[in-house]
Amino acid sequence: MADDSENFWKVAKDDSAFWDAYVSTRPRYSSAFYKEVYSYHAAHSSSWALAHDIGCGAGQVTTELISCFQHVVASDMNDTHLAVAQQRLQQQGLDHSRIAFSPSKGEDLHLHHPSSSADLIAVPEAIVLMDVDAALACFATLLGPGGTLAIWFYGRPTFADPVLRSRGQPRLDAIISSSWDKAFRGSGDRRRAGLKRASDAMASWLDYIAFNPGTWSDVRRIKWNPKAKLSFFGHECGFEPEPVSNVREWEAVEEREDPEWWRNDWSVGDLKKYARALFPGFREAVDENDVEIAAHFQALAETMGGETKTQQFTWPVVLILATRK
Image (cartoon, rainbow, N blue to C red; front, side, top):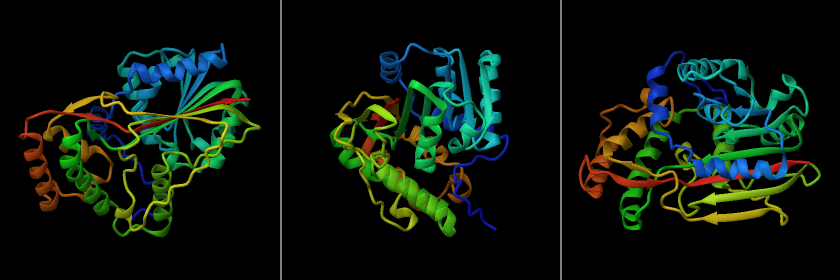
């Protein structure tokens, strides 16, 4: 029987091949990006004792946070992900005495860690999978006064060149859409509910997140390349995304167009690797010799100037920063 849980982003145990491909085809969070987070935190707090990496996956953000904070809690609701993070961080030679691994949903972390104990909570690429109201209540409990909440999400790789974007992006989007369609075809009601929630969240550019002014201050929403597509799926799953905005007038919103943001120079081969590792279920649901997808890749190769020709890609990204009162 197919899994009908809302926890649709889960990697099988010991699947090191997937994680190696996944990490190698994700955007690399730049030093300029982390500077946005750290400068914001420094403006509100002088404490760098403890940070949380929510939904840590393979531990990429934990690796960064431990360079600035005395201790980091890496959490994930999937114990197989935590095992991968532990292994990869150990291979990097990081001091494990400064890193705690917590098997927990992000919404439940306050049940396992002391109130007002955290200085910063990072939620990379995970908030759309969560019950946002329960998550914000949990984060508010964990953060001490002046603590920083940093939520971010990135979407699909996007051609930086406008001409290539107009010609090649529809092909790349069609490949991704077809893969999602095959992976989620026949999903049950619970899974569809989780997919719909995530789809609406992405279509909203996270503007659906509502911050209570009695709890949070100095909310900033920074959007890089907002003309590109943040959503990974929507109509492919049988519904249309419904964006929602709960942005308040006292919040700061900034949009930045930057073709160099998290730049990747990729060939068609790199895009094939990305497409295969975008979601754990694609390898089972999408045949490597799928005729439809192969035709799109062939057309994409012609647009890009050949199979081995590299082109510049950028990423749509939204970062939300907020301070606990």
